Length: 338
Image (tube, one colour):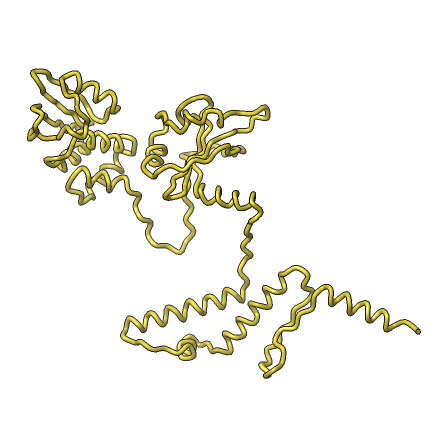
């Protein structure tokens, strides 16, 4: 907590930050400073006439105070200290020490911007991890209303869970337990990242019961598609498709590598030769990939592939269930004595 001593019109106020905005403004009004927090600079170079001193009480305070410049204000400092106070102190101290931010404005922007994840080819699941969890008891939560909010508001929601929020107060009728003890909730999601929080406030104006929901926006959009009858199902990739895609990817990587070395013109045949592959191999991959896809379609009885590469001869022979039935009927008729 950073201490602020302000003297104005022979009155003095010593208070610590962070503090609720309304309470801080009321304290400042008590010594005659009836101006927005953003107009109270953290220096004595001002037109209002007050004198101000800053007292750092911890290592984090000192790191923050060392970045205060001429035109920084109490409102910004209070926001920064509020953000820091709601997080792990050791982690915050390390991040601040490692920061190259020269002002508290830059520091606030840097701390509140989520770090970019290092490039990885592994599955990344964004969720919450509970310390020494004893059990997991999922509950069915019926979403009565979904509300998109700006990233700044969402960031405040997931980091300050005991505050009151207008979007909760205004949607009380959507959050309740029915006679079967089902949770009826609102879903609040970040309109930037798409992650969300599902809430049953149970009569309160803060998220009394809540849970983090990764990819909430995507889930909502998929549900809306299903409800509209436009449900899309992505079929699993076949082995032949995988081989074909791997070959395409390897060929593209090889072309890019040689392009960076100064080469400009390429033929697919030469690139494939470097990969111990040929156009005939690619043709066979494509042929088998298509055949595997056709076999999975409704009404298909059999699919036969010919790799003989004989001009004007069929490469795929397909029999449908209707054709199969017609053949069976013909054979049965042929066996009658007329």
